[in-house]
Length: 163
Length: 212
Image (cartoon, rainbow over all chains, first blue to last red; front, side):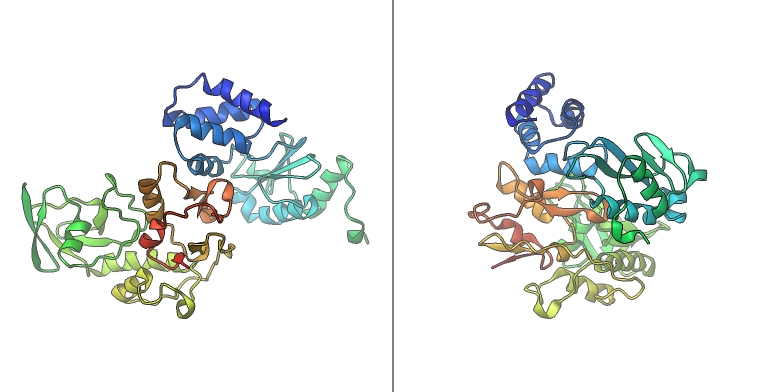
C-alpha cells in the first residue's frame, strides 16, 4: 500500500478517538485491523495525534505480540513454545522453521509467502510440539515435518539436505 | 512540616512524613543499593530489586524505595535476608552485563562496582551462567556512545530524556530478555539528533552511556 493511503487510513481511524494516551492500544488495534500491520508512518502519525514520543508508540508495539511491524504474509506459521512444547522440543521446531524460511520470529519471508511467530500455548499440549499453520494445529512437529508442511505449500527442501 | 523519627542501622534520623525510606536513608548518609529509583517520580518503579531492607516487626524484607517512613520504625540495611535478595537481583543483572571494567569509561564511578562492594559480592556472578546480549554499540552520535550490553535498564536516562525534551528520543522497547533502551524503530541516535543535550549520559549509573 503506498504512503498516502496509509496516512489517509490512519487519520480516518484517529478521527474516531479523542487524543488521549489510554486510547493508544485501541488505536493501534484499529489501524492494524485496517492495514494488516503498523507501518512506520502510521506510528508517527499516532504519536503526533496523542502528543507522545514516537519511541513510546514503538515501545508498546514491540511489547505486545499482537502488533506487527511488517505486512502479513500469505500463510501464518505459529510455533508453540508453551511448557509442554518446550519440553518436547518446540525450540528445535522453531529452529527448523527459521532455517527453512530464512527469517526470525515476527518476520515475513521476502516473497510475502510466510509469517513466522511464536505463541505461548495453543491448548493442545498432547500434540506437542505444536505449530499452528494457517490456523490449523500440526502435531509433533520435528524438522522433517517442517519440510513436509512446506512441501505441501510447494516448497522443496534445499537440495543440499537431500541425500 | 511534620517529621518522623526512626532508626536505620541504629542511627537515629529524622525524615519528612510520607518520605520513602530509601530517600530518608540516602539523605542521612546511609547508602542502600539502588538503580531504578528516581526521586521526582510519584510512584516508585521498584523494579531493580536492590534496595531490600529489613524492618523490625516484619518477617520479610521490603524494598526501601516503596515503603514510607513511619514514627519509631527500626530499619536494618544489613540483615542477611535482605542482603540475600539484593545479591540475587544483582547477580541476575550482572549475568547479562558485558563486564570489562579495565576498558570501561565508567571504571571507578560505576554504581555497579559500588553496589558489589556494599553487598560484598563479586561483579561476576558466581551461581549463574553468563547470558550476554551481544547487541551492536551505537557510536553514531558525535556527543556520546551507547553500549546496550552495559545497560541495566534502570530507566534514569528515559526519565531524563522526557524531562529535557518535548518529544523523547530514548525509550524502552521489545519484551523480556530482548528489552532494551532504544529509539523509534531501533534507529541509531545519528549524527543530527541530541546535539544540544547529553543529560542522559550524566544520569547513567553504568558505562552504557558515555561521552566521547
